[in-house]
Length: 317
Image (cartoon, helix red, strand yellow):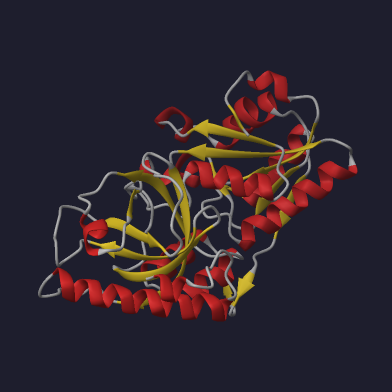
C-alpha cells in the first residue's frame, strides 16, 4: 500500500526500511528489499520502503526521466517482493534542498525512528545528492541506527541499474531487459475508444493510452501477453498507413473478448519484437500483413509456452 496518512502512526511495528527511488524494481532493488524483509521477519515486524514521487531527476537539473514503472506498477511489484508498507514522499524543491543531516533528522528519524535502514551501494540523498551510503552509515552511528549496504547485482558482467534498463528498453533489447528485471518489461495504461478501423478490417483492437512519462521500446509490431486478456499482437507507434497524432499502442488480442474493455486499466508484457512499422498501399494489404503477424504470434506463443493461447487461434483468424 502507499501510505499517505499521518506518518507518526508508522513508528511502531516497522522492523526495517529500504531507501531508494526503485524505478523498475529490478534485480538490484529486489536484493535490497529481500534484506529488509528478512530483517523485519526476524523481529516479527513489518517491512517498509521509503521512496519518492515524482522521480528526483525532475527537480535536480537533469530534466524528466522516462520511468520504467508507473507508480501503481512500482507499488504492486514492491508488495510482491514482501514490502508491507510503502511511504511515498512528495519530491518537492524544499525536500530536495535538505542537507543529508536534515534528511535524517526531519524525515527518517521523525517517521521511522532508530531502526535498521537498508540501501544500495550507490544510494544518494540530500541536497544535490551530496549524501552517500557512507555518509548515511556515519549519521547512523551518530543517531543510533544501523545501516546495511547492499552490493550491486550484475547481469552479463554489468551492474543492474535503472539507467541501464531504460537504455535497454529504448534500444529494444527485450531479452536483456528481462534478465535485469527478472520479468518481462510491461506497459500500463487505459483503453480508450479508437476510430474502429481495426474492427472494420476484421481484427478489433484495444487502443491503450499510457502516460507520457513511461519509457518505450522502438516503434514496431510486438508479441505481448496480458494476465487478464491473453496473448496479443500490438503496433506501437504512429500507424503510418493511417497516421494520427502521437504514439499509440494498438493491441489485437488473439482470443475473442467477452465484453468491451473501454476505460479499463490494462497492463501488457512486451514479449518479443516481430517487425518494424510499415506503410501499406491500402487497408487490405494491411489486413493481410496483420493476419501473418497473428500466425507468427501464435507460433511464438506456443513455442514460449505462454498462458491463455487459444488452440484454435490460427484457424479462428
